[in-house]
Image (cartoon, rainbow, N blue to C red; front, top):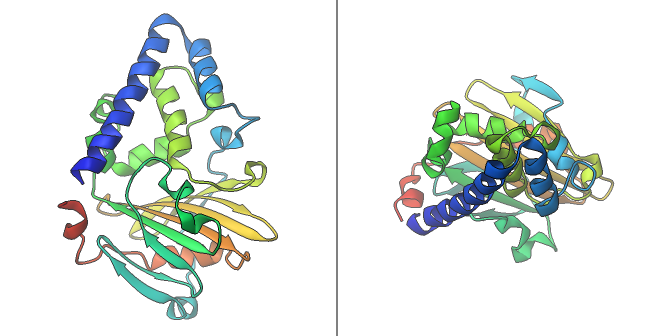
Length: 246
């Protein structure tokens, strides 16, 4: 865990240093130019301007579908997954899910877990912006837009949005929703095609623990309702401490 934390801190320091230098010598236009040059704009990367289009509150979960899923338990995570998927418990490293060998051949689901206030501990500067927990960090990231960059913090979250979001295929068709249940809330960014579907689910539970579920659904067997069923099975496992004490 120490090595992973140091890696994220290094990324944060470099990012803030670069943006601070740009912000010191220019205003919003310069910041936008910096982001556009280093990452892209709304035309080249539509993700930079996509925000939640709707909110789903307490979706009805088909219990029959839950019983058809296979249970998995990892450090930090208990979840049930449809048959036919390779399931991988990952670590928080930059774009790790874009480089794993499993990404190309078969249907795959990547899982992440982090403790409450994980992101605030990595980026303590954000507390000055009123961001105090994992949910507020994720919420600000998902609502970040290239066109709304007005200061250093705006630019930071736009860049974090690209780091935070895995490969979703052709971005021209991606959408995002916000959801809330009795014990979880978060965001699902997804892309549905005729041959494969992508779902990036950022989930925060009532205790502010953070989970990411990234699904590459080759064969396009899943839809948004089925993904919400998967999320409904998500819980912290009894062996969570093993994941955060290394």
